[in-house]
Every structure is written in structure tokens, then in C-alpha cells.
Length: 363
Image (tube, rainbow, N blue to C red):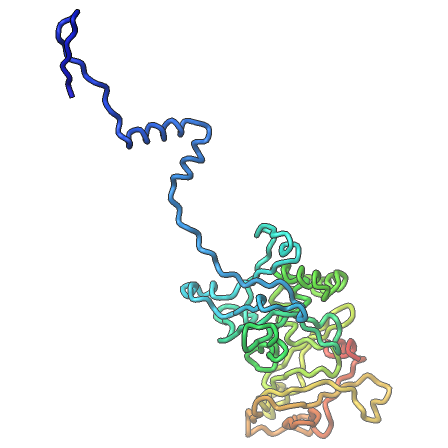
């Protein structure tokens, strides 16, 4: 806007007034001056719009001692819907929180997480529906310390008080509990979080952990897990055999582990040369026993007792005719000894075979 004014000493002239700065323009100038100052990084950061981070759900465990479990330790092992496109991402991840972190709120870098699977062959094997409850440490008082394992107790609700009324999660065979063996915890790097919890809970000693680690030096993690499912710690410990294969099993001794196969179910097939085959199919629960036969008195000889028939036993070849009595493998029945010909099958623990070495550790 132009303004006219008159002076007594000079002629009339025009004067342009100073421009008025808008509020927006003033704000920009002040912001520019502040950006040139030493704290410009903080100003820029404060004016940047960021999306709030979403908190990922974590399955945290604080103890493996059944007597110390609380409601907050309840976890669900079912796949999460957000990982439906990633088959491997549907396997649950457990975060082990050691006591030091619980007390001091240490940074997440000190926490140890591990992905767990329902079976040894992990691809495609998710935990069954309604797999919710509590992880805990289990050890049979009748078995050696090296037999301990982390198990999962299924409960009807999320309260720790329902632990005693729950049941352990079983593998597909319905006979074997799902478990992470103590020897695997001691020897496999990904289980370091479980290892710390077991030690801090006082459930195991450092000496036992080191002993377990040395027992399986050179054996991979999956190999250790498969070994545990067929591991015997005592002579009369029940185990499952499949009559249509040569079942493998392992034996835990004080200082070493031995492995062998049971080949007693195979017989010669008449007319087929040296060939051998399995006359029956089916699964049985059996156990080794010390032979009570008079001729075995004072000797280390074992027999095999049938405890239960798990799946129906079927004849694989109805036309089979044994060459002689020793080639006849009798169909197993509950309570009987596995028998070939007219005598029970015996294993001498004083022999040099792998099977003999296994039994020697048990007898």
C-alpha cells in the first residue's frame, strides 16, 4: 500500500512501507535458523512422522521347575496365523529368560530364543491342535541322571494349578513323550537358554551338563534326538520294536553310549538261498530280562519279554515254510518270550557283537 505525506522542507514523494511477514514465513525462517544450530538433528528427528512399532508376541519361559510354575508361564505351541504364508515360520519360538534378566531387565541381547519342532524331521510337522500348557524338566527317579529331559505338559486351562492334572504331550506313536533330552540341551548350541534355566533352577549341576556333553561329542543335534527315542538306561526298561524291520536301539552306560540292532525277527525263506525275510508285521512293547534258565545261572544272558501288542500282528507270507525248527519265529503273545524254534531267543552279554556290548552296559 502506498501512502502520501507532505514535508515543509521537501517536495511531495512516495514511500513504500516494509512488507509484513506472514506467520507461516516467520515459522520457516526460525526453523531454518534452528537447523543450522548444533541440535539440528534432534529438530529434524522430532518433525519426522514414524509408524508405531508393533510388539511381537513372544513365548517366554522363566523356569523349568514344576514347583515354581506360575500362570504367566503358560504357553501355546500352535502355529500363529500371521505366519500362514511361511511354513517354517509357523514353528513356535521360545524365549528363555534367565534369572539375571528377570531381576535387572537386561537388554534383549542377553535373551536366548530357540525354535522347537514336534518331530525330528521338522518340515511339515507342526505341533498338534490344542498344544498349550507348560514346559518343564522331567526325570524318572528310577533312571540315571542322564535320562532327564524337557517335556511339555498339556493342561486344560492357563492356570499352573492344573499342571498336576495334565498329561504330557506324546509323539505320533502315542507311546513316547515329546521331549528335548538333557544330553541334547548340554551339547546343542541352540539350547543354551534351556541350559541356563536348568542350571539356575538347580535341577542339574554343571558337572552333569559337562558329562552329558562329552557323551555325544561328534554327533549332530538331530542324531542325538533320534538316539534318545530308542535309548535304554536300565535292563528292564520297556521299548517298542517293529517286527517288519531290524529295530535299532541305544544303551546309555556310565561313560559311553553303545548302539545295535535286533535281528531276531528275521528268518530264512525256503528255496531262496541265503535270503532272509520278516514273517510278521506289527509293533510290540518288549523289554530285556536276565535269563532264569538253569543253564544260564551265573552268566550274563538276556531274553526278550513281550509286554503288549501295540498294533495287530499279521503274517507277511502265508506260504512260508521254515527249513527247520530254528527257522521258525513264533508269533509274539503278551507275557511270552520271543521264541525261535523251541527255545527262547537269548543274547549273551559276554560276546563281541554290538548287541552283546549294549547288554553288557545294562547287566
